[in-house]
Image 1 (cartoon, helix red, strand yellow):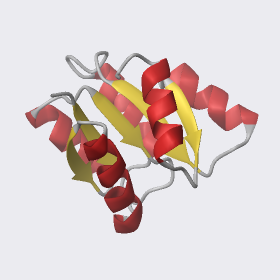
Image 2 (cartoon, rainbow, N blue to C red; image 1 turned 180 degrees about the vertical axis):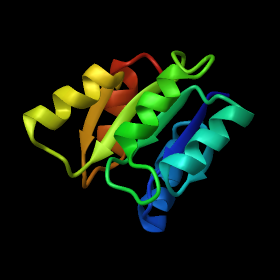
Image 3 (cartoon, one colour; image 1 turned 30 degrees about the horizontal axis):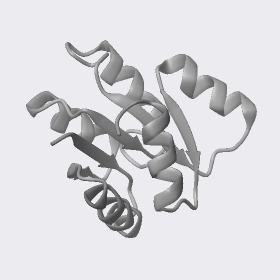
Image 4 (cartoon, rainbow, N blue to C red; image 1 turned 90 degrees about the vertical axis):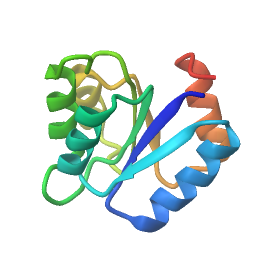
Length: 121
């Protein structure tokens, strides 16, 4: 079973994403900010990461840069899931190592489609 780390400061968003991902047969874990996500990745690197941009402590883009610098951090497929919709932000995320980009609000179809596009499903 593939694993996905859900990184978002909103408990509701994490809960919705968890339900969707578990229906897609992913084992899920959660982090409320980028720093928690770094610690989670040090313990066990997931196959995929669903990542919010705007979070306290460490935001998504800083987490992504830290992840990609970690040993094994080049492996997870990272899908940004955020309200940030400016082209410059999307380009910044892709340049930092994101594989895909989803706009909030999202649903199961959107997540399934993006995960299929990046070969996770």
